[in-house]
Image 1 (cartoon, helix red, strand yellow):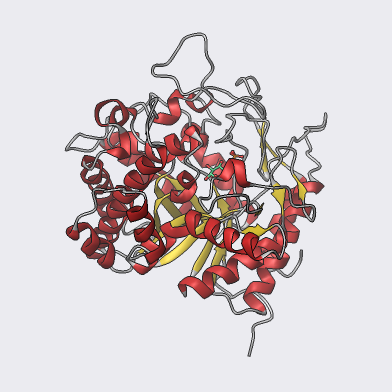
Image 2: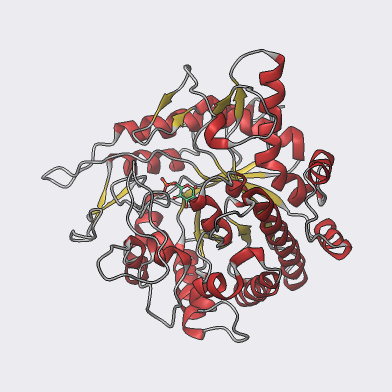
Length: 475
Ligand code: BG6
């Protein structure tokens, strides 16, 4: 018999990450992370990745929305919406300011104790990402980021400390946020955010990306084993950016190319879920003469450190058309899909793609799934009486929840929960803007950090409260 609605214990809530939200970038003994060195960008100009903090530039993550000092007020608002779960990350630099210390920073650990306790006070499950685009900058300058095998030890030490400290408070974990974003290796910012690698002239970007991703996946698999040894009840997942890639037409070459494009973006899932590299990829490494540093011991670790579940973000779908090569390169190969509209930032909006994604993953990996990001970045207007009429956001979320519901009730997908992105407005990862807003809660702050920082409930706040109360029935 199929269920007609979501399971009773479905985890409704929202998601954020430390560096886009906390601020307090140099408080509590925190070190400088890669995100602290990213300037304000915009829809048409990328964020700069500076080597030091430059006086005449604006770094939006330094202050963000100052959750560091507002966490009680913010979590209270989430509780008011009825959140069952709240996803955030632990800033690596609060725990290990440089990344290579042997002893953690107690003040940083104590901060997250307070945050998790505050969630638990309202019966909100904390859902925690260990590494979300915020590695210590010292690991970039001294070690070259994830191009260096030594990072495995630094990361697993960090993971060990966090699991040991919080295993009684946090059940749901993820190792690396959107680990597969770097498959888009032509984008300097994606690789930098994931792996802390700054490309140099003449670098084989693709090869470097495969090597860095390998070390990260080994580190992730080791972390899974460490976590389970500390507390077998902890659920430790991978986290993928899931953008289905459709063929632009039924032409067989387009279909084959779209399949290769999906494989190239999502092989990370194959390794983290199945515990081994897919055959097409080992063959590809050979054809490219990529003698990557992949040892037999690494392969054993991958095999024994498979994840418990798959967390993923879903924002958009892509379409591709075969030209003259089978090597998927995101920027140059994407074509417009005439059947979907786009957001103000040009992100295709495709609710049906969410149902497709849930089914695709279930068929391929046979694991429980968890939507830990979804949402619409939009310009909001605060009215004189402090309201935000964000019917466009409600429409976006409603249409996605409807498709998610079909996947659960009609297709039998095993889905744990739904945590829309940026449940409270925060700094955009790609552009650094505050004006690209996702939240149910408006934060009065502009792109340059001006504003009262006051929090206001948007129309979507009451709407989402109703959705949670009715377990997804009242949309
Ligand atoms: C995901 C990231 O890629 O998308 C988040 O995990 C990010 O960190 C989110 O904020 C939305 O992207 P943006 O660029 O609109 O902030």
